[in-house]
Image 1 (cartoon, one colour):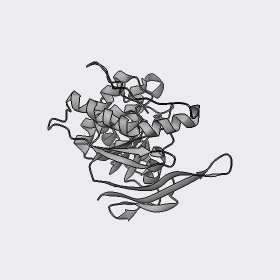
Image 2 (tube, rainbow, N blue to C red):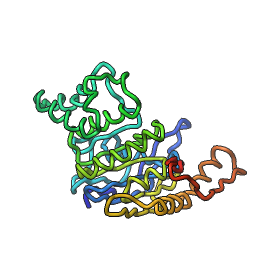
Image 3 (cartoon, one colour):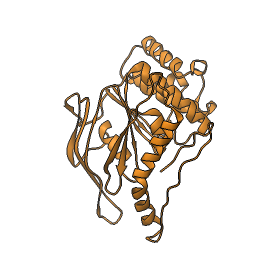
Image 4 (spheres, helix red, strand yellow):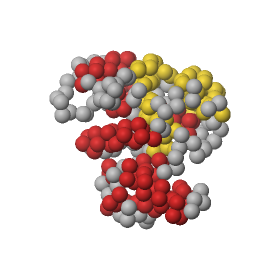
Length: 280
């Protein structure tokens, strides 16, 4: 297995100086070149696990290995795309994308060539000299993805990268991300609250239980040869995941709203043009 997550435990100290376990015995294998999404209620440790894979934090117990090598710190084989694009406002699109290459001492012309190639991939060739304030939210996120891809990572770690975008923009970026994934063969580890987003993008959806976070079930997604999933299959998978999560969602809501609160799931209805999905 390319990425191996073995027995991961992680706790934090809360405001009351109490030890709060966030991840409990996480075991997961990810194949090279695959697209895996993590879904679960708020506070279940999805992003925490992503940061551990990135090497931005350390687990209390267990280990994470990539190609047999233990992850102990950040590395060039892993790049994170966050919810906020995090672009430098004083740099142009091209300068933002080449920034990491500049730090790696890549020759200027070579860096420019690489950047232009990935900017073409995310359909921003006409905006290389634009500044972040001149871009829409979706365009800024495209720049962030290009900035990550230009580093040629083996694993692209995406922490709710489209959650702040409007639905139409998100639909376009879903399509573009799948095209990039199929073209580059990069391994993608994707965290989201949107169940349909996970179903539409992934080969495998890992469903997290909460407090402490642990894997409740793994749902495998099989698409057609053309990469398009029938609408009925999408709806069926989404409903299944929502059913799996019902108990977890109710647990969180009762903590927030009181023990008398009852969460009831409804069948998901949508029109052909509706890509809203279910959020958790």
